[in-house]
Length: 331
Image (tube, rainbow, N blue to C red; front, side, top):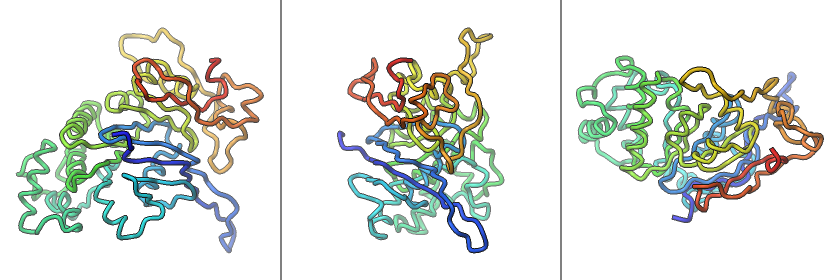
């Protein structure tokens, strides 16, 4: 379908910095800064970047757990930032989330059956007498047996807990699932199992994913497109294949160069970034990446680049490649 399922335009989220006895606001932390993204029906968008760049805040804003300071969020043609409470309640079942930590995201006082059917009961989708059968079917879809229905979260491993979280997420038959570092807390062997499960469920139910991660090696296996985030802004977007093969932004190059490679010492010299990520409360002028960029020039310190098309890459079809770099055609 040509119309995206989720369409974000110039979205910004900021948190006030308060000081003094009267908690006077002296500034703002701009966690998400003028972000524009879209996710199509049945598409997986990978959102990558260092810890603290604003990925989770963006996800929480999309779920309306944080208030957007500016911009628009359209879900299936409905503007969420101005929608009524009744409209939002009806849409919540269509947007679900899988959290990062499987040890903290499940209520330790509830059985697995209660956890995976809680949303169905809250939205009036099943009756209590159908809980056991429904929960058993959901567990079967995620590779767990019905004998686990009456156990508690502490009786499971991290991978099993994340499967329970996924079963809870698909219970309401959503259109979009936000996976916030959904495999980062798991062993590598378990990560591949969970990724395969997510891809199988996408094909089976026509799901769309916003897959958030700091690890490009994980994102490349599941995402159709990738958006790279730095200091609250999107600095590059394109297909996963094209970005991994030919990154255009210096920050994306550094992320890819940091991926460990098997088979002995690497032949290419990794692009090292000096210094630390600047504070989002006091971002640098011009390009936010220029203090760490090895290709920065004087104009990079004065002019702020916008996310602009730089042509279609091979294999991308009609999907545009966009980069926020003043020197994207030179380096």
